[in-house]
Image (cartoon, rainbow, N blue to C red; front, side, top):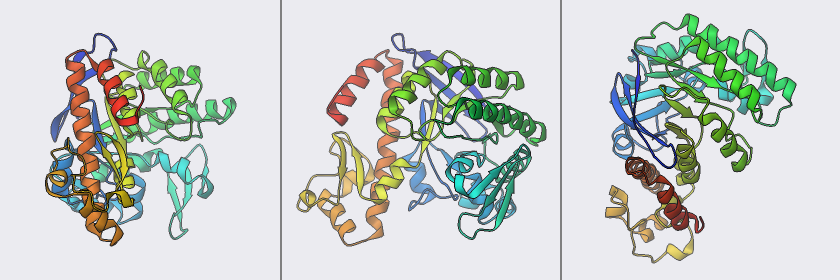
Length: 372
């Protein structure tokens, strides 16, 4: 079995899930946040640093690694793990998100999607079968079905046709998956804001029988209220004995609200992306270290954090690095932000274990956002 999910405990007051995700390259307590290593690298950090600042499960991007350097080259290194010298576990997306993000550069048919290469304009053609073949070569522990991620507010008729095609693509992908014993293929639940389509998608994917299920098509421009409402609806629709993965979510509020609605796995570029622009997540809320207020600030970035950055550097020094356009500043804040989310998820898991996640949420929101 490529992966196995073990449900350990449910918070008595919220139903949030504490579990263990067993993979060929390690077992991980859930809920878990996974840093994104789009091109076999979490930007600015070495693999050793990522291991220190994460729980040991990260992502790679199928579309981008297919474009550069090519999945055959990655395969020749023994997959992404050998390519980037990563000793942990891996998940790859399918390229389906690029169907959404490159909407002005692609054409969808029943057979697959024609892209224009995002940098050189050359023609690319991705089908459900090709997406699985690429991911087989990339060698991740968990891989994704190829899907269409439509705009959240697409009309009902378009969304219904899209969901039905995503289900057919999921079946086609599973039929050609070469390594089901070492790579777990997840189905992806689509349907936008329409609960009946989400329910239909889950029911049909369950018939195909995947070892895990992802929720796609959220955090794509809809309001947080819309996202939370849909997660609350999906909470009782998703299989209880399989891992649940909410794709593309990484802000502290969304992580906690996702966990309260039964999610086990999250990923997002947010913590590393904002770090490169000088924004740091701290126990007192987000700060922009480039601001002049920190020019002579001798405090650590986050006095409540025990990461390498906070134990060794002042806010004044970090501001200096950004103002001097030194790459080290981006590296240090990226490391800290990932470590912050690693620690946040550890606190969330402990709160579930002690049946007090709702209280933890109230305290955290007040401290981080200044409101409940």
